[in-house]
Amino acid sequence: MGRPNPSDVQPHIPVLIGPLIAAVSPVSGHWLDGTFGAGGYSRALLDAGAQSVTGVDRDPSALEMAAAWAADYGDRLRLVAGNFSELDHYAGQPLDGVVLDLGVSSMQLDQAARGFSFAKDGPLDMRMAQSGDSAADLVNTASEAMLADILYHYGEERASRRIARAIVAARDAAPLTSTLQLAGIVAGCLPRPKPGQSHPATRSFQAIRIAVNTEFNELVQGLMAAERALKPGGMLAVVTFHSLEDRIVKRFFQNRSGNAAQTNRYAPARAEDATRFTLITKGAVAPDAAELAQNPRSRSSKLRIGQRTEAAAGPVDPASLGVPVLPDTPRHATRPRSDKKGHR
Image 1 (cartoon, helix red, strand yellow):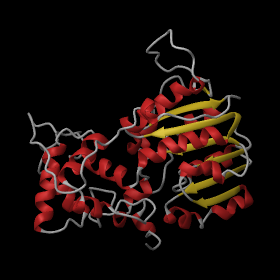
Image 2 (cartoon, one colour):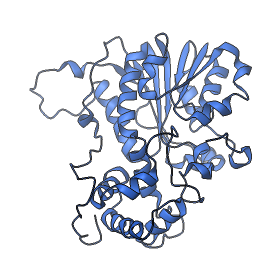
Image 3 (cartoon, rainbow, N blue to C red):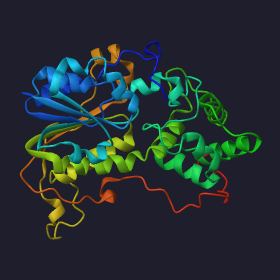
């Protein structure tokens, strides 16, 4: 895919950057921005005093667009094409900080050709790395049961079975190829939204995007990689945008800070319960009124920060983080049960 048209991309505003910089100050040493995007967090860290930043992104367009300004920072900014799930391989040295801004970026949403937006007509793509199976591949080949499970578990869409049935009926007539085509099918299955409510296709597009990009696996692996890469005293700052990914991050920090819920107070301590992070933010930090006015897209964002201790890194059980898991559903042919009271 070619370089995006600048007129098709809105100015990027890093979400919660003010509270983030304030919480990790004084900023120094070497940081890694695992979701480089338009570079807003990397620039803010460098301007705040970071000696150097490694920017990692699996989207080739992000690194291409940075060419226009990255040279301003000389060798203080190093760009790497890759997934943040492997960030410890790109660090080059123990890190003073890691920042992750999860989900789809504003830059990707604003480019209709990337296929992330239900508000702009474009090819049904949604691939962050611009390679591998696309959203069109998924919705045109997955079984009805698989589609329903993806929509329910990755998007918390209560009408998942109804929507999956409509998708299969539509693709039987002709393959689904555009974002507005899919958005219209989803909207036709749900009540018209009231003023102030989100678009009916919001949850479905989120679920399909997560499935296409294996986002939950990337997140768990990325949190583990950050734990391995950070030096004692290093900071891990994570910005989330929906409840499922925030639950994973919240439980990761709880578990790694010794604050996980104990089901049996008489059970012996386990190696994985060692305190590997100290919580810097007590709960999630949300945008204030001024940021919401400046950047409405920040409304669902949450920031959580932990500081690495001297305890050795260790394994993480994804189940303990509440990672959604799809049932063992056949990818083809089998038909799901009918809805009950409008639910799945």
